[in-house]
Length: 359
Length: 281
Image (tube, chains in turn brown, green):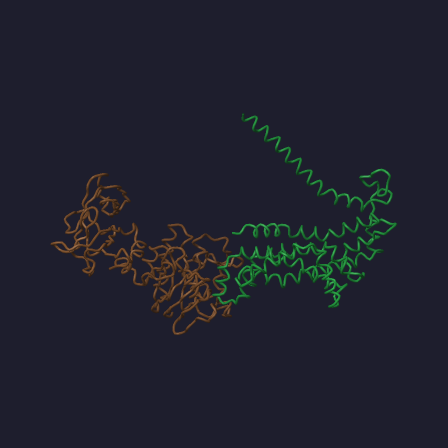
């Protein structure tokens, strides 16, 4: 186990800059999730941490050791790849023990290590098989076995669950969390799945175009997104953006929008300097309540009703802007009916539409 | 309507079979004719009227070829030249094709194209400079010299073919091996080559067959019995007033034997190797 420090790391391929001045500090035993859409540079950053890709600048420090010029095999890291990357010509046992074999660990010790890892991952019965004879989930477990058997300073996961079906993905996600809780090894995990990021990470770095948009704990990222990209990327259904102008009314600040006005009483942001300027209110679907008794309300016409079982998603047309509300399963408004929804303003975020940043 | 469709399908099937049988006949007939000639007696070979099947079987031509013409030495020379060619290609070409498949270095594309350009020139253009070079370095009329000459045009084929197989091997495997403790060359030898072994066998076989059958370079670069290969030796048996058809046919049959045996042994591996390289997975 060791803390990880990424200091001003840059990477460019010719004139194309894929990573721009990345700074991340991860505590010993922490679980960092690099989250972002395809092509945002998260896998490149992971490859730089692993030593598989040289950086164009900056430092990677594992523990108290600058590993910029250290070969991947000497970084004491272990990596799980999206494609599992199991050696097809070797048995599961040899796959798991390959790292120890390369490090000249005595056979008896190696055998014990492999058995222990296999027991932890419940794959003892597969040890003599070849990777080609395993299912996707089993291969994933073997790949994880290969990583944990070495007891490394750092675990690196590169979208490890992407190739699994939905059910198995949930199971393996839980497995990874359990393993991290048990082993306490510092982990860097790359994904584009926000649910994985929210459930696994102690810290999440949301990336876009090679730049970290926000680096914080999952709760902060969800509740107080740094900008509209993060706000829109995290959460399903995505956050609603209500465009309007901030105005000072008799009862306090209001947001004038195409469908009326929204009282901003209770909002936890200092927005005085934006009076008479356009702003965007970011409202999560679960912030809406069907009871209209709230101080702040939005009125519109019911456009779509989507019952999902535990919830009912209602899409409301508010002066031409579509707002998705997550309501209780018993709330079933009729299409075309007018509807007024209450809003918990403490959970609402205001953004500057020009920069996209949270005010 | 359905009947018409099945009728036209039948006609197409017959046409397809006819073309395939014709092609197979064109391919197989010369080999079959050589085989028959090699077991015919002289009277059945040189005749006024065509004798298709031997009236009497004989292995006399094989015995005479082996005992009287120095043919065993030709076969051994060919074996040495072919082995050395494959060895040089294997040692240098494997590393070169791995580098082309994995590293992006300045001039990589140009170098790859350069390898192709070598193959675009007719062989005669290369023979004279090669002859001069071999003479200068004292490798003229030697099996090693001939193998080096073969390498000059077979190595590009080897590198291009093998690169396809290396491209098909997932890069993550090497990354995993490097993290697990291998060096780059260790990952190549321990992980990538075992995966690409079918391709490697297929590529080596192509090179071996090309070197085994080569005639023009061998004719120009060898002058003595000590280094001459079987295609040249066989051709030299044709004299001004003598055309030993039976011996030529027997020589031909013996010469294609190693190729046929090799193909038979590694046929599956080769087909698997060729398709793996072609369809990048």
